[in-house]
Length: 282
Image (cartoon, rainbow, N blue to C red; front, top):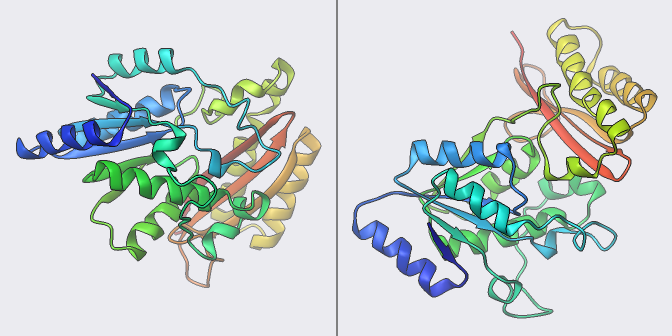
């Protein structure tokens, strides 16, 4: 497994793969890898000849009061996990590589979609995501990239960016990986205390209850969202939102919309948890 830290060797390696007629998949991560990340690599391995994983804790997607400084950095353990998962290469760039112009870096923004839902509670977050992801795409030039569906809004934003900018790659979404009690795997789960960890699966249970009510046609969308927010508050969460949206573009559902996503973000202690479930109406 090649470990790369700068642009020139990264591009040289990808060029060698292409000369051999091989396809390339990129799996962008911020490290502190768990089984959910490994599932992304597994999907990439199924779809491409070569898989590159990036590890970069991106400062531009963290707000001033967020956890950039304390975000867990576990590079040695991550590299061991990636070797076991048969990654072909790992890109570990520094901040100066990703943002060579300090204080005046170019920003990539997807209007509208980036300021809704999580974007409303984390201003500038998705501008940081799209700005770093486009840089990674330009460095690696992959045929495809894999992201998890746990952050469904992020996946939707990146797909919109690629479509709007005519980027020649496919963006794949990998199903959310969960612990046995239903909690979506996340690097931030380690912020939960033991008591909070027993409460955390209620987020997924609440989303499943929303799906059941939608399938049973029990109440309108707003009533289902309000009931879910109340349920989360009773359980001890501080919810940012529960929202029922069109799965295609996260707009408000219109009459006749059949493919939906129920999305939620809620704080529990130090952790901000996000999750979503799909709904296909009959």
